[in-house]
Structure formats: structure tokens, C-alpha cells
Image (tube, rainbow, N blue to C red; front, side, top):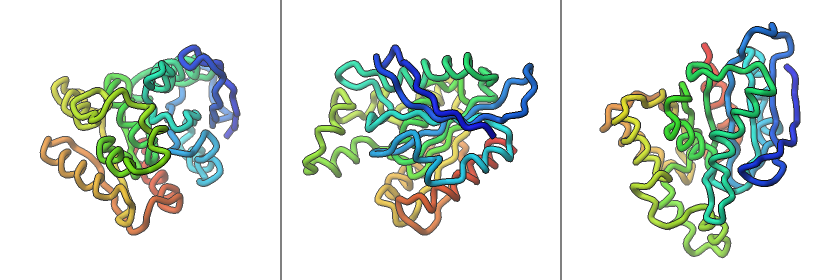
Length: 248
């Protein structure tokens, strides 16, 4: 597998942004490769998946392209100051990648996955553009933004989190994953879902709530729960299950 570290000038962000790309080396020129957008968590960045897991080795088994952008602590949303991280990852970045590499632009060949904040981002992106993504995976996902707001309301750094969202609560808005699920159900095009979380994770309560909601709405999904917390040891295992589910 080829490994490419890119500095991409984003018009949406009005800055250069770092993106890691893993790409199969021996691909026929006329073959468009399946692509996975793989998202980092809060306080993380574009190198996390490369440093903390064996994603390059795992991806080589399926000969897929993996794209790992850096979005700082943005929660993958267009923030209140007009810095459009959501537009960048959901719209601008796929266009750039599809122009730079032989990757498919078809729904059935485009996938998104993330951990923690990136799990929220994967769901927000994949559900908002449910006509563009075949499958979505959220690992230890920060699914309930309003609950995270409550958990951090006494945190001195809460203002950094608040910058991402125009108002609270987000319930019923396009920043609410539950709302996006209901909208995708109305349109009858909910992508296939994979959710996973450690039973000792501080987000496990949110995971159980979301799992119950999907069941009530008759939305098909794959669920994985194991012992462990909010940690890379779990995510390294989960991503292998995700890749098998997505590409085999």
C-alpha cells in the first residue's frame, strides 16, 4: 500500500489542512477503488489511525483507499464563526480525493467511519448525505451532543465545545443524529449501520440509548459491545470488524 501525506488547500476552511491517504499501489488505471473516510476523535488528528492501529495493513487485505483528514476539535460541523468543517469533509474533500486518485464516486463504493467525536461525524456525514454513502460505522460514538454538553457544562474548556454548535439543545436540528435518522427513514435510504462501544466507556450509556432507538425505528444495524473503555485497544479491534463488514 502507498502512504501519502497531503497538505490540501481548503476553500471551505480558508486554510491548508493535513490529510493522510492509504492507496493500493498496483491498481489498473481504469479501475476505481472503493474509499473509506476514516475520522479521528476529539483532541486527535490525522495521524491517529496510522499511529495507534495497523490500518495500513488491514486496508491492504481489501485493496481500498483510506482517507484520514484532520479537523481539530470541530465535531465535524460548520461552526458559529463560519469555519465549515462539515462542508470540507462531507463535500469538498471527496471531490478533491476523487480528482487526485482513482477512487469511485458511486454510493456503493463510498464508506465512512469514525471514533468518538469522529463517530458522531461519520453518522452526521453519512446520514445527511445518505444518497452518497453505502455504510456508516460509529465506534464509541459521541452520539448525543446535548448529553455531552451537560457532562461538560462545568468544564473550564467547555467554551471550545460550544463554539462548534449554534445553540443548545441541538435536538431536532441537523446536528442531532436522532433527527437525521428519522429524516433518512422518511426518505427510505438509511445507509447500513455498524455501532460499537466498550462497556466501561463513559459513552456506553449513549450507545445503549441509540441502540434502543434504532431497534424501535426498525433500522437494521450491526452492534458490538465488549469489555473496555474509551481506548485504542478496542478501536484497533473494532476497525478490523468494520472493514470485514464493509468490504467482504
